[in-house]
Amino acid sequence: MVRRGGPGCLSKSDAAYGSDRTAASESTTSKAPPDEGRSAFGPGGNESPETLDEGGRREDRRPEAEDRSELCSRAEGPLARSAEPEIPRYPRVQRLGAFEVPPDTVYGAETGSFPSVEQEAHPIRHPNPYVRTLPLRRMDFSEPSEATQIRKALDDFIEREVEPLEREHPEFLGEDYQRHIVDDDHYQVPEYRDVVETIRRKSVEAGFYGMDMPEEVGGGGVDLLTTAIVTEHLADRPPGFHSAIMGGAGGPTPILLACTEDQREEYLDPLMDGEITTCFALTEPDHGSDPHYMDATAEKDGDEWVINGEKYWITNGPYADFAMTFARTSGEKGDYGGITCFLVDSEQYEVEKVHRTMGLTPGGQAQLRFDDVRVGEDEVLGEVDDGFGTAMSWIGGGRIKIAANAVGTAQHLLDMAVEYARDRETFGKPIGHRQGVSFQIADLATEIEQVRWLYRYAAWKIQNDERARKEESMAKLRGAELANHAADVAMQVYGGAGFMKDTPIEREYRSARVLRIFEGTDEIQRRTIARELI
Ligand SMILES: Cc1cc2nc3c(=O)[nH]c(=O)nc-3n(C[C@H](O)[C@H](O)[C@H](O)COP(=O)(O)OP(=O)(O)OC[C@H]3O[C@@H](n4cnc5c(N)ncnc54)[C@H](O)[C@@H]3O)c2cc1C
Image (cartoon, rainbow, N blue to C red; front, side, top):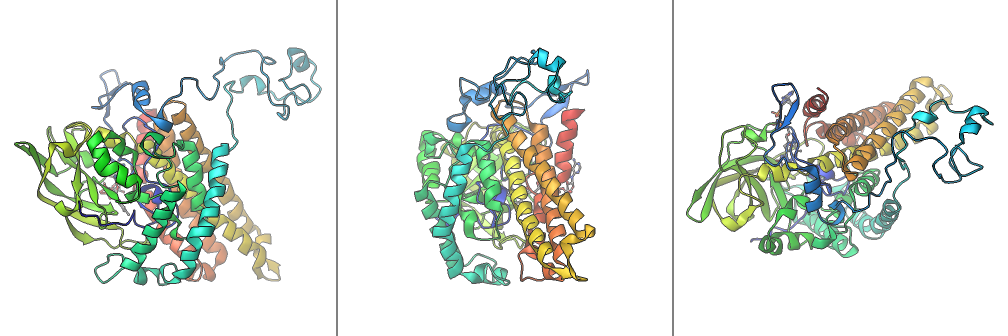
């Protein structure tokens, strides 16, 4: 394999496509069941394998429609369902007074328990009329302590290892970053690739790279909720080099947990060690939201597969050492089955063109061409004809990470707007004293909390082995809208200053837009939500 080196490009949404804002790897740590939409890097907008049966009920016809519990039991590391559920499940209807609660809980603060029946009859305080209907399965709104520790460790790492590089290379972050990062053919220049690789190496050493991968393959075994919280934290800072910390789109992805032992040695291990990078090649010129209608084919010839096709907008495509490449091996266009994922070394395909994008770190996406590319049977990832299922199984976590990334971005923009509103004076008063400004800020802060708890709830559900497709899509949908709205509000509060390239706001404004497109467009998220409801 020719090693091109360089991790996922530093483009906007690292959770999915390699970002200059966040550092989360693109793939989810949760083995959610296959879903409509694409995996962590794919288009995320394809038809769901589910259809309605004659009685109008949803029938699951996914090729890989295994029992969810089986999916979980197959998972390892952080994906594995623990024998003991972490969060105790209480019977839905139970008399109050039966539960021990921490002393600082509002109800029964004095006694350490919920009020007894007598207390309810003769309440010392005004009883909350909804107490009886509170869900009795406890929900914990505190941040997992591991997330707090990782956030702190990441801050230290960024201060020690990343910020010096940012100071050394202001040209890659300043007003003219686009001009400096790429050459005339729109490839990222070697000096920029060096920075990215330096951070990646250091991140591997520090243990952040691939931290959401299972420990069994050398990852950190960090769970989805914690990863998402860390993703949010990393996005809550101005554009910088920190996206390389976790690899982005070119880094470790749970899809590769389907590797055989040999494949693991050749692809996954060096990927985890930061020696090589990858890309996820699903979208085609004519098929984004509906990748299962793909035109790419792979035909069997003796012991080999012959792949033909074209893949579009592939993040880290220009630099990947191998591509997870999807092609139809049987069935008809539109079938979910009959698609196979191949691990194709980069010297076997052609990078036809590096795309030019809006707002993202330039030089990150490419068009790949596969002309009679021959690969052995041992280059099939997972099962023949089941590639789509393998890829889609990680979709939920990808969406949650996008939402988390959006929340972090929005928080950063909100903080900037608040600070500016305090300082900037018009008509003799800070603009923050004007309702026209302060209400925009108040609304944005409210939306941030909404999406924050939505993505955390979705992650929590997944980790509790509950179906969360609706919530994942809701979080992704609202998260993408939130980041765009936050950039708009920040720009409005800053006025002309926000429109200039002196602040990161105009860049955020441009780069937020893609969140509504990749990993499943807004419309595809709504479609998923509606299908879950109807
Ligand atoms: C920056 C970037 C990076 C990307 N990286 C990767 C990558 O690494 N790997 C990869 O495989 N792909 C990647 N993609 C592709 C991405 O996943 C697709 O762009 C996305 O899924 C949408 O597909 P499309 O652009 O072809 O839009 P289309 O599918 O052509 O849709 C066009 C419009 O029609 C709407 N629409 C489509 N179908 C429906 C429907 N049934 N109901 C209602 N509305 C509908 C869509 O919402 C959209 O508004 C990337 C894209 C971008 C922009």
